[in-house]
Amino acid sequence: MSLADRLPHADTDPRRHGFIEDAFALATGTLLVAFGFHMFKLAGLATGGTAGVAFLIHYATGLPLSAVFFVANLPFYAFAWMALGRTFTVRTFLAVAILSVETALLPRVVTISAVEPVYAAVMGGLQIGVGMLVLFRHKASLGGFGVMALWLQETRGWRAGTVQMALDAVVVTAALWVLDPLRIALSILGVVALNLVLAINHRPGRYNGF
Image (cartoon, rainbow, N blue to C red; front, side):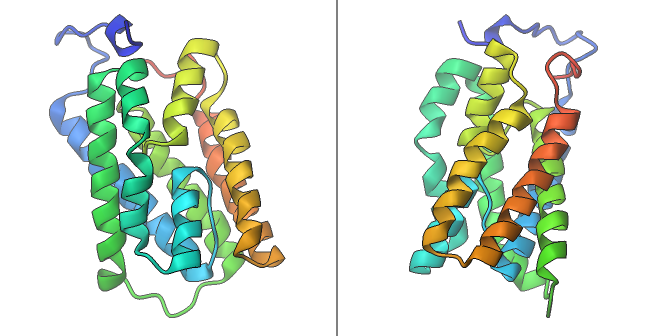
């Protein structure tokens, strides 16, 4: 039985989010993350998780970031289905698909001539963190390491933000192959900002909505 199956599912449960609330959350969360990604890309920074892997492949090969991000998440859906249930997996797939489209379209509708890298790291990381928090609280994620972090929080009581930060550190360290030390340091700053949002605001048992 998955974690999702152990949660109450009655339509009358006051904690349950409605369809419109969930749809708005998917749109809001992915837009925030897409803009954070855009700032990171403009500043030549990396991030953690499968998004970080996608950034590294993008920098190394020139392949479209949106397409690489979508493909990098595909292996995690089977685990999400078994561990966190069908609803979570479907919403996560939709969130990743929507984010991939937004990431591809955003440069066409937003033009930023220059951005200070330190500001991009902090503000981009905070935006991604808030966007992920919105998705987490509506039973969705951006796939990849986020799925593992949520599963460990629900089954072991480990904070999702702490787990995510540890996994992200591995990915950012791998960025040494394609980025200079300054960009690595700023990328770490962005990852810390991102995961502080999750560690402080998404603790086990603190939030009961689903």
